[in-house]
Amino acid sequence: MSAGYRPVGWNRSKLVYDAVLAAAVVVYLTVFLQFAPRFQGVTLPVDGAVARMQAFGTCAFLMLTVALSIGPLARLDRRFLPLLYNRRHLGVATAVVAAIHASHVLGWYYAFSPTDPYVALLSANTSYGQLLGFPFEALGLAALLILAVLAATSHDFWLAFLTPPVWKAIHFGIYAAYVLVVAHIGLGALQGDDGPLMGIVAALSVAAVVGLHLAAAAKRRRAIDTEAATGWVVVPGADGLAPGRAITVRFADGTAAAVFRDGDRLAAVSNVCAHQNGPLGEGRILDGCVTCPWHGYQYRLLDGRAPPPFTERIATYNLTRDGGRVLIDPRPNPPGTPTEGIALAAASADRREAPVLGEATT
Amino acid sequence: MTAAAALVTLAEAWAVAGLAVAAVFLLWGIDRIDPAAHGAVAFRPLLVPGIVLLWPLVLWRWGALARAPETAGRHDRPAPASIHRRIWLALAVVLPAILLVAAAIRQEGPRDTAAVRISPPPGEAP
Image: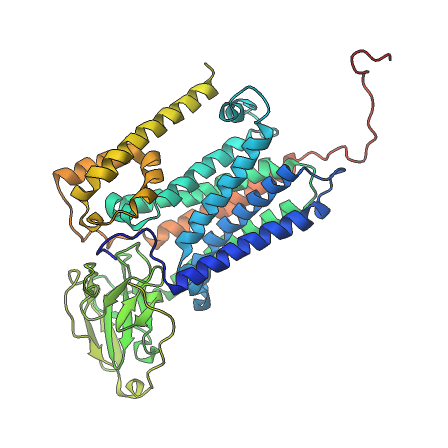
């Protein structure tokens, strides 16, 4: 992790993820080019260049929709966590597909005049004061620029170099990009005479991504169980945790801890991965380490330190027992502070250790 | 020069400056501000697009790190979940509104209407 940068941190899981992603894109493009013209209400078949432009454009939109849906899906149902694991490559692939869409637009609509294609793109339609006939190309260009920045700053170097707050602020641009893309489609493709298919797909995509995010937010609010910030907080169901799994406890100040069960002990660390702020409480213990579900960064449970030679540290939290209840101190220890954890209740400790699945990556 | 041409020229100049910053930073500067980059060369070309796009930010952070190297410990401040919730509450209004406006202004095409000849092409008798 922090021991030295590599171009791409591939492992078996990520290779499988990328292979499935590439295959899905190829299948979509092939199916679109083969079948989509049958659903378009045009009097003549569209040109090949236009069909490819539409194929890559719709593909990029759907990839962006999927990328935005993975987070809430994983929060609503843990079975979707594998999709979250390598979302970064999905984001980069989305930017590439969107760029290919743009290159087809430039190479078809703006390539056959003495005017520079980029100048033509920006000057062919300047009716910014009206909705009907709005230069929707500018919206797509702005979205593409944002996607390019996000893809270009996706390497781990950028997070360390820019600092997490700045990096995160930049990557909030994904929301602006999605709004721009929806507007680009709404004022562009949906104004054409191509039948209702694209409108239906766009509406369903927007409904899905918005609905999933609102449902995940509602679930998170229900899960919040906080007491006063100065008091110890009850960890509900801690003794019922499955081996290697965690429960997330959110405190009154907005921070959160992940209480893990490792063997017959419970211990708590920050819920925030030092890499890209991934939700450690949604991860599991692999190879004796808390493993982030996003990119596989690992930390020892009892001291919050990444195993050597890595140097990341996260905060630990103190646990105690109050009769049958497990309590957590909401005041975090400094990152890397050793703790002892507490023993699991006797009845729970008798449960057999579940076999570890998946692959650890560091 | 039109505004569009000026924008394109500005973008080209931005990219040239970014490439220059990328060359100096990746060949010389990065080793002095990030220990994890020592001996790691293969990943550096991947940084070029980001530096070209964000070179003023790169220069600013480069200068800041050169003056006062930072250590770990800046990670534990995630964006509150409430920010994401507010964003999606806003998008739950904005995104459907965009599609509704798009549907409202859409004009049906004259697909089923027979073409009407307005005037003959040049050189052809009426």
